[in-house]
Length: 349
Image 1 (cartoon, rainbow, N blue to C red):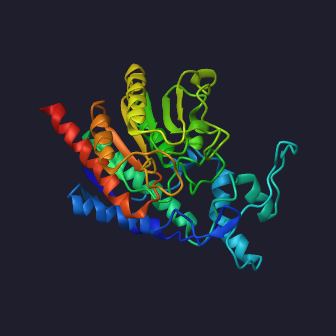
Image 2 (spheres, rainbow, N blue to C red; image 1 turned 30 degrees about the horizontal axis):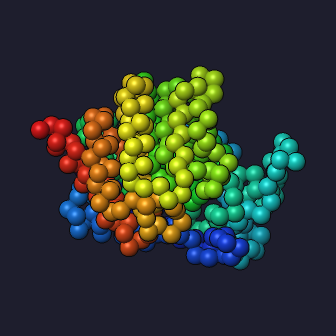
């Protein structure tokens, strides 16, 4: 399996995240990339390739142009004010304020475009986000050209990024950008299967009114888990997209047995929809030792996950999302990809 990676994805090195009322070093850090690459090398999984540059056009196919301009200029605008810390939103257009106008102030724009105060903007953020989507698109190009699976080691992750909103460490929605690119290349319907512990609110928001992308997510119940306000089972899409959003919220502490039972239901829905490409938003934060999640999968369960994903028999693009137990993240990702290769071999045999 080809692995796509760029060192530029590590250009973002944020120092601050609001967690438990304190500003702490973010759980999402550049070292995650090194841990994953080390795990892949140790397991002998895949060969690493550098991505090609794809420009902004694929981003603008799913994201608002003013939002993209904001991300490109925010850090410079923030520094121009003499601010010493990182750019963090602290005021929002809440339920009692209509928010019909976007403020000219950088603080106001941060509140308009930010999902929450968890994610700061710092030097290198835009550059890393650009490199991350290039990783995703280059991996997609390989899948479309060869029919073989590929893994995009995306960082920052993407599935919390909506049409015009960042948060949850996400700025560009890599899975959505890739799905739109695949449709533009001639595919009729794409499945995005999000297996991150946290619901992919951004991906759902981008596609919830469309039937050419089936979005399926297995995640922690939003009544108790970030991002809280989206991902309930009765959210099934709207308008033309009715029936093409499928959410499986699970309680904290859910076991591998429960998780795999739901995965089989998700796979059946993907089969029914007649999808031509599978994009997996891969979060390995379903691991029992993950510091900010609450499922109980063991490292060996990720091998089984890969096998079961391969059983769908679809051209498959795997893109990195979350996973924050850095000592285990490498082996867990390697197990998913290795299990996928095993599943492919078994299917051929």
